[in-house]
Length: 300
Image 1 (cartoon, rainbow, N blue to C red):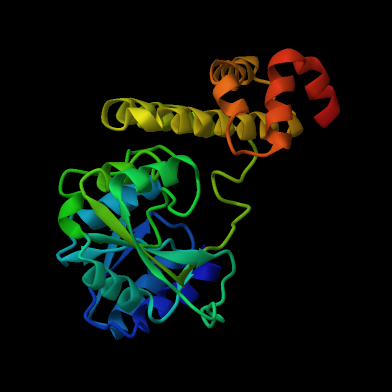
Image 2: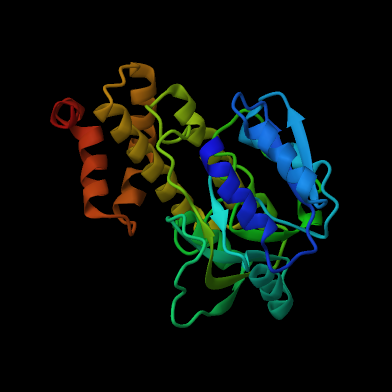
């Protein structure tokens, strides 16, 4: 990630809101990322650098959570960047709406100088609407980034060690603590689609971490928001659909994993069929449980 790190850190230190505690976590990098972090710290007193053994993104975030002292916190991945008013917009949105979490829009393009929409808007969403939006993968996502949180919300919340989909397993727990969140359509976060990320690499059993993540969500929704349970089932089926597709096109041959994803699709198939997901996804789900041999031959 070294080639993206300078751009990321510079976008943070050039924030118009300057009263920041900036924690950079060197998660056992084998390139020059750790050195670069130390160099930035030498030139900016606000920067604290943590050097640690590699433990993955969850562990890196947790190590920062353990030492942060600010009233608010945000997460920025090292291959992404933010607009220079990212913090000020999120902070002013919290103050304007009397909430403890604010969310901004994001763009899948690394351009910190970006033409904003001609008009932006702020909305205050109830907890129930927020959870529904997460389940339907609409305006509010489960990503940790692109949000400003009151720090106390993470007092008893940490990201699961060693898992991918760590955001999916965690952020809804934080949303569950507040009555409402605020959303600002201002584009403040720039997300880089990295083909070398864990979730975008060739399919492996590690991708099956989406299963315990979704099971935890279903358990939570069943207890706290039972009327929204169908949306959780639809999302779970959609993920199984997507990863089964990837496994097939990449000629992944572990039969146990393939059958496990097919079982999830089969279990939630009828709920998924009446969801808002695309016809192509529904056709794939149908073939995955009715004519899997044809499906594998067609996509290989």
